[in-house]
Length: 118
Length: 107
Image 1 (cartoon, each protein chain N blue to C red):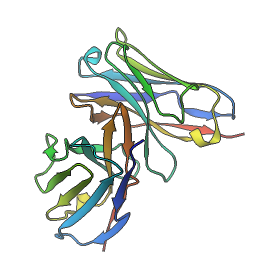
Image 2: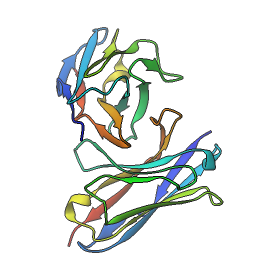
Image 3: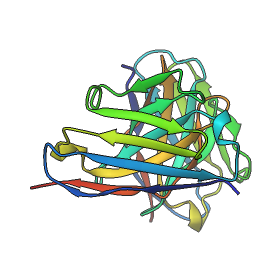
């Protein structure tokens, strides 16, 4: 059974940093591109970042470029999102999602809440 | 960036109704469109990809159509478990964008 479990969310002050993790199981993690998608409270979905299976290709939304860094450790079946210079508008539930063959997101984690507030 | 506009943003329907949601892209995206269902407090679930391909395990009452700039998600006979918010998603130049969502509520 495919499982994605996010962790690392919490309350952080504006300008602070946080590192999210996503532990994957039930599939060959090293064969899939992975993504972060966020959802602000009461709002819609926003794609944040994508990383290819071997980390060769990395993409970011304009809203986080230069502040967030996506990475992965295929030996540990884990995906990460380092978030720096956090702003109030980064407050959201952050989901990790697996990209299927045609780059659609076929499995999602349960999400981890990040709250940026003083 | 390509924008996706869903209509309606909200709809009220009864069990057994046929429901259609539209997603319009600001420029042509061929068939690079997916549909997701999200229930409160839960992660989104992939329903349809490549505009019309049903994801494994998704009931056949869900169907998708369209290409270019106009797409539709149809639920042929609404069931109680289908009351949720639906999002379209596109991929272009390795930037994914979502529509604003359509909330389907019980009439």
